[in-house]
Length: 128
Image (cartoon, rainbow, N blue to C red; front, side, top):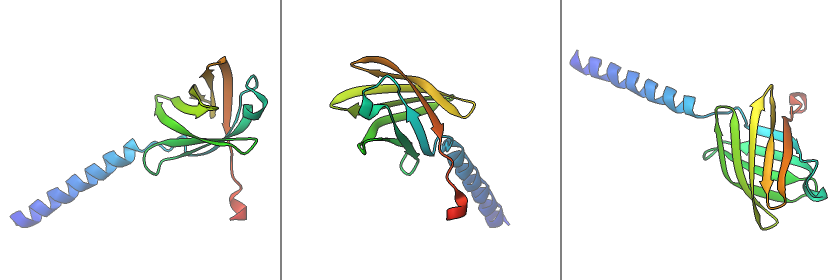
């Protein structure tokens, strides 16, 4: 009887641990977002940001000219996204707030502060 009680407690504990781990994985940003920085140099004005959560939250910028820049860090807390990336050998910091399904904020670069907006790309599931 004690053996069964011990197994039951162990299963309850494992379930609780799995639940906590699942709650810490925030999938709000996961997927593709189209972005625009209208005041940036032409090659960097538009593109996509792709977020994944395979080994912690990661992001990559894919610019309209085909360049890809991996983020150096990504943090998402309380609907605020903070990212750092190296673009043209310069550190760039992006801070955006998620509101009404859109990300809006600023890019801080050596050229100054620039507004950025991003909207999730909804992929057509019927083609799969």
